[in-house]
Amino acid sequence: EAQVTQNPRYLITVTGKKLTVTCSQNMNHEYMSWYRQDPGLGLRQIYYSMNVEVTDKGDVPEGYKVSRKEKRNFPLILESPSPNQTSLYFCASSPLAGNSGNTIYFGEGSWLTVV
Amino acid sequence: DQQVKQNSPSLSVQEGRISILNCDYTNSMFDYFLWYKKYPAEGPTFLISISSIKDKNEDGRFTVFLNKSAKHLSLHIVPSQPGDSAVYFCAASAYFGNEKLTFGTGTRLTIIP
Image 1 (cartoon, each protein chain N blue to C red):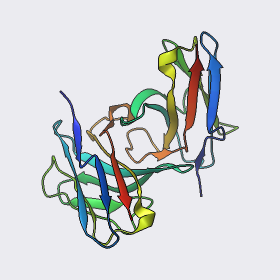
Image 2: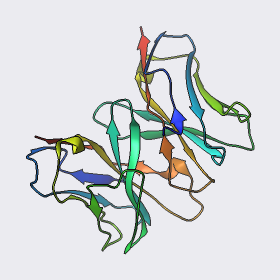
Image 3: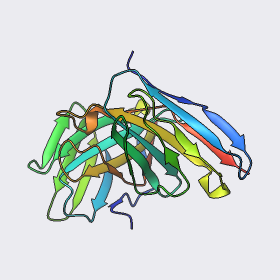
Image 4: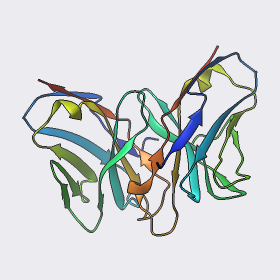
């Protein structure tokens, strides 16, 4: 079954304590991306990766880091979380060649609360 | 700067009637548009798309209309069913095949039985 798996699904953490949200896909997709969803703002892209070792900033990259050491994994790192990073996070993946938006697969989301 | 806007945060429609969700965009470079549907506790799933060379695309009960001159698109659902209750996001990209999507703010559709 085609899947994008995120962990953890729910997390409450404290300001400044580093955390990583993992994302893994089993479809051999080149493209992976992270979004955050906030009320009244929709889905905003944080970072994306076109392939292994190739990453780039999206629209709201401040306070986040990513890495793409393997094709299947694209972790999102919050080095020093702050309360304004409390949000619902989605990982997504898609193939590159001849693709279109309808082949973007989203994970189920990770609820992150920073207190 | 919200380049894709959905001005109605919520919409309630009677079962069996038509649901019309609207989306406006400002970036004239956008030429591929999509609608995603999202249930609670799930990730968004693709619903329907349209490229700028068309003004209409149908898939079963779902039809998307594009008015490029007005920078406006709409999603029509006919007839509306209770399972259609969800949050709907429109999204746009600068060219077909570009995964970098810009999403709207979402409209919560509630179908009333």
